Amino acid sequence: QITLKESGPTLVKPTQTLTLTCTFSGFSLSTSGVGVGWIRQPPGKALEWLALIYWNDDKRYSPSLKSRLTITKDTSKNQVVLTMTNMDPVDTATYYCAHRPVLGIFGVDEVFDPWGQGTLVTVSS
Amino acid sequence: EIVLTQSPGTLSLSPGERATLSCRASQSVSSSYLAWYQQKPGQAPRLLIYGASSRATGIPDRFSGSGSGTDFTLTISRLEPEDFAVYYCQQYGSSLTFGPGTKVDIK
Image 1 (cartoon, rainbow over the protein chains, first blue to last red):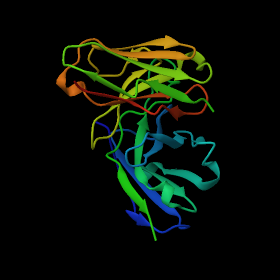
Image 2 (cartoon, chains in turn brown, blue):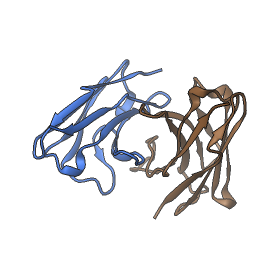
Image 3 (cartoon, one colour):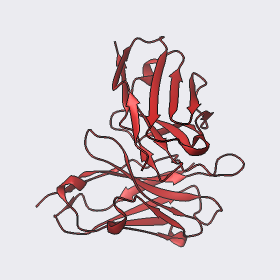
Image 4 (cartoon, helix red, strand yellow):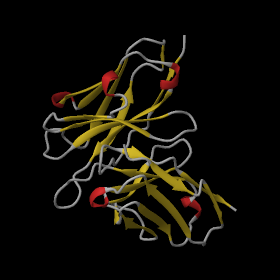
């Protein structure tokens, strides 16, 4: 059974850097094709993809947020860390991490299943 | 960036009825790289469909996906009480983007 859990601060001040950790179990980030992604959801709004890291340490970022994001992994600890710089009140959201599975023969689907429970981050002074 | 539009914004139906949800892309989604998720209040999203028409593990066969190019559809053949939720489409043909969602509520 795959599980993921996000951890980090619930409140950050504007201009600060947010660091979130995703701790997972039930899979290894050294398995070919596997990845972990981060997605956020402002209260009452839609989902927004942020970043994705793969088993081979390749990384992808949302073009609109790329300059502010860094995603890293620690395979031995089963953790993925996301940092987002220069936080602003508009970044207030629930932040989810999610497993990028290997589906079908080729494993090319960039989808997320399952997801962690999410963590609400509020940006306020 | 590919922008996804979902319609209708809200769909009011009764249990047992058929639900048809639309997802339209601003440009063609290559290789039908489109997925659908279900999200219930206070919960994380759950993957339903990937590759436009493949059901994820454990998803009942009343959920089906279709479409290609710029027009995609999620169909729920007969709504069960647990199906009332918000549904999001996501494309992964060019970067990754989500649609704004369709809420399916009880009429």
